[in-house]
Image 1 (cartoon, rainbow, N blue to C red):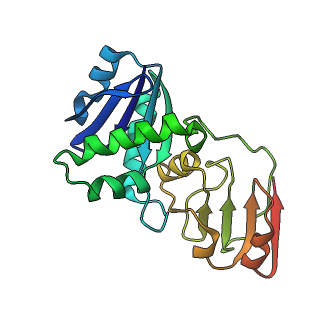
Image 2: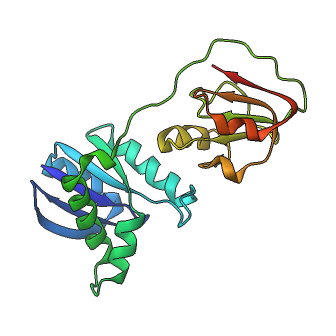
Length: 209
């Protein structure tokens, strides 16, 4: 059994079935877990809300918090819902959340590879790195959100929404794209990327851990 959810703070769209949704509805978000336990799905697919430009928003992190709660009981995948939300908004239907859930269901069935399996993406980094006081630091796809304390001089960028959430709950502001950032004294990265050199100040350094 597959269940697709279009998360909302008050109301959540739901669609479930095997290869074809046999029921779509909109339910109270507080009752979602109870309904899931009654349905007992093998997989839950949840829409990942991003801004129109693809950046993270407060709604992104609220949906991720919801998804992590659901993942305590079921296998969870997430799908970028920008297209399904836009399509549902153009349809002449009353229950747009339910229709969004239906479209998320269809998207997953047609191409499961567009989804991301929810998991804990963090990894402890034991290596020590000297960071001068006042240095502008970028954490790029960096798997250890506890490596540095949150501060005005520390920026985070990652395309991994689950890692972004881990930084977010620790108080960091997280960007999704390098192009939205300036230049830094030190870049700590978990993935070496040529474009990073464009974001170094003169005499800056990149450390790949």
